[in-house]
Length: 304
Image 1 (tube, one colour):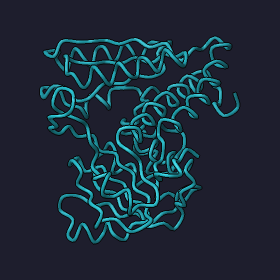
Image 2 (cartoon, rainbow, N blue to C red; image 1 turned 45 degrees about the vertical axis):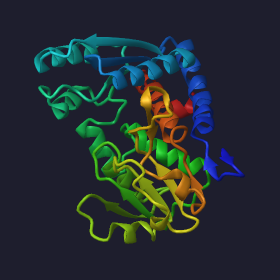
Image 3 (cartoon, helix red, strand yellow; image 1 turned 30 degrees about the vertical axis):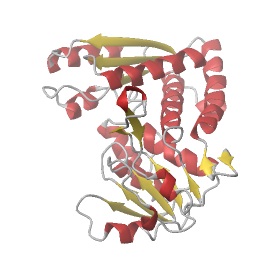
Image 4 (cartoon, rainbow, N blue to C red; image 1 turned 90 degrees about the vertical axis):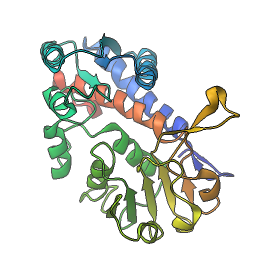
């Protein structure tokens, strides 16, 4: 458990380091067996945020011993050309994980691209096969990294999930929907009663205020205010929003979907932003990659 006893903050960086330590041991064992995990990033264009995100993941790969390669393609790359590269990576036995960095140019259909990645190498958990396995409660698939990260934060912070009232703000395919699927499973660290809210939800604040666990992934800066939070509730902030701030470097700063300063005194536990879900998402990507390498060689990761 990594919680600041004074400020009731869940330290995502500290918990991510715990997971990295576990993953590193698995990677060392796989490398000793002649199967060092290989992860390939594919990035189109020079979007500044994408460059930063991929760079952070590359550095983490280096730290843990994952062999990573990045393909940087021109923004004008056609869907056909991208599909050809993915087909080559699918056929390469030294590549265990493939990550297509979103967003993609408007000329390319993201759903088509995500579905082209082999389900066995889909460490982002976006392939329809892996989505289906998650909904069916089949642990043989890959779970999207951000929802899996939130789940780990809750578990490792000893937050009661079973029978808890959970409200998720946001119904997106990357966070909201898979998050709901994880927490309502008939399984350990699940069995929650989940309400999935969105832009058309009536009486949104009323739903939020009854939550034992409130997960914000709505994409609106500092949307969640103190009067929307049940006293003592656990609040997980998934949002990443850039807002103007004359005092900050370059005149902007990153904030989450939760008004942290206002909500923190009301909440039981709360994730800061940054320093909460973000580091955990990368940790789960690395763990998924190690698991993909283990499965490719018929080794159960838990048995290594």
